[in-house]
Image (cartoon, rainbow, N blue to C red; front, side, top):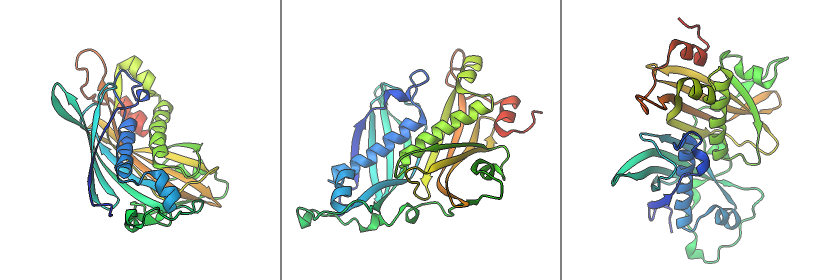
Length: 309
């Protein structure tokens, strides 16, 4: 048995209700989580669910890279059909579709990279049948760092008298920093949630909280592209220090921003995850509802910390 013997799975699913926190639209986080769940089901369909991989093979299934493009809106009652194709061992393309008025509509195009990490705490058991054991070797790595798709680890030093947040914002004075904790080993989906959370915190810090912008301007946040990559493992009781900054405003209709997550080890900050997000706004009510908003000078200045013209 090999992983590529049957390369495609079709999975039916629905977004979680928690994802419809503004009206009935589903946010990017739920689409990334649906993409991850579809890939997990691909493994389960082949008898390689996370439980078997852990207990029988001593391996932890880890999403190390996931990206999505979101060409159409998903709503809370939509049924999603996920088409999962393994392009090569551990690399998947995932297309999410829903049905609208009898026609298929693509709501997400995603790519996911999987690694199988050797787990020190899991003693592999002898398989029940030798002929049922797949060839997992192309996916097996010693740790997350060995499987990262990021070209450079991107760690940072902590200078005398600096704390973690000062070190993270030293070279980017307009960046927003936030620290949080999680359990061992921090999974890809936790960083997806962190990306959503840090965007909310960043916007509130700039006077552009989602509730304020919705109430005062009728704008609804829209994400058209997002990617989260693991760089190295973050472990139990380590504090994760997160920095978020806007790199560029594109045609005054969206801003391209980056999140980096670090853990402190000695006097160094070790990067454990990185993410990018393309974020804008749509008109939420009245004339032009659903159309993209052109960002005004005050909004651009708040996002970039640049002075308004």
